[in-house]
Every structure is written in structure tokens, then in C-alpha cells.
Length: 227
Image 1 (cartoon, rainbow, N blue to C red):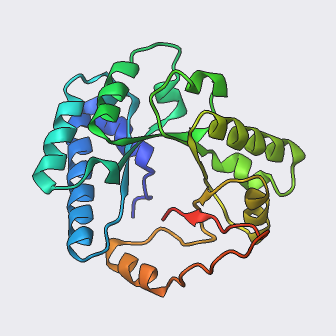
Image 2 (image 1 turned 45 degrees about the horizontal axis):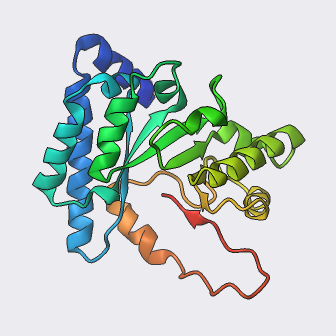
């Protein structure tokens, strides 16, 4: 039996064989179809799709995204496209025209795994993105390493000053959750909330969630969960 492959392995093979555009379209189609079905069931949910860096050099990609959004009748703001830090902060301006066109469509843009590359938060100011996702290596270490805590705090503070939403990846403990609330991070993602779920079990997971209680004056708000 062969070992399971990580997503980046599939992307590498797709790039090597010239199938990257086809793979990206298959994932987009499936995600938009699910988003349409959720909306028809009175549960409109956003979706997020990861993009390879090479996709941002394809001048036809924004047009294809628009066509698919129209085909499936999904509002652009329900689609988030996630690009790794290295993909958008590569020292050149090559990704920026594609990012601007995607943003003009109304699609949300997110910088994934932030902090793992050599870029700085200052570089984000020139990118037309909406969101920064702090890499799980810093989030998971912030409960025991003051340095990781300082890094996450700096990313949250400066990103918010730039008008960017911040997502903490890899939230796996209540202590980490409390620390994130203390520093003002409003969105969390990780095993503390749920393991990855197949589509068939997602509806049941949502149905089992308790509506958040009204926050009393002076109390810390709960993080918003990203499945």
C-alpha cells in the first residue's frame, strides 16, 4: 500500500506534467459546486482554495475564475484564494497584476503560512490582499516560547493596522486559544475546533455547534472558527 501524499506533492507533479491549470480548475469547480449547494440549503458558507505560485503568472486565470463564479452562481466574496507567502512575496511584482484583477472581481485573497519565509510585514502593504494566516509553527509554540508569542502578537497588531484580517493556524489547545484572545486575534483554525472532515460529515458538525453566547461587558470574545 502506498503512503498518502501531501497536497504539495500533487501540485509538484501537476506542475511537472503541465496539468496545474486543469487541477486548479477541478478544485475550484468542486468548491464552488459545494458552496452553491450549501446556499440552496439555506446555509451559505464560504470556501477557500489554495493556489500555486505559478497560477499567479497566468494572465487568463482571473477571467476563468469569473466564468466559474458566474456558472455556479456563487457571489465572489464567498471565495477565498490562498497563496503561500513565498508565492506572493518573491521579491518581484509578477503576482501583483493577477492579484489586483482577482480582488477587482470581489474575491478574497489570503496569504497562507505567513512567517515561514524571508519577507516582512511591511511587504504586505503593497499587496492587494485581505487576510494573513499566521503559520502554525508560531501559533503552536506561543504557549511555551515567548519568542513565538511575540511574533504572533506582532503579526496580529500590524496586520490589523494595515486593515487585514488575521487567522491563527494550528490552534490545538485551550491555552493557545486564550492567548490569541488576549492579543486580539479574532479568527482561529485548528484541531481544537475540528479535524478535517469529509463533505458528508460537515453538515452534522455545523449542526452540533452551539450558538455563541452573548459576550458580557469586559469579557473576551470567542475566536471565530474557520473549518
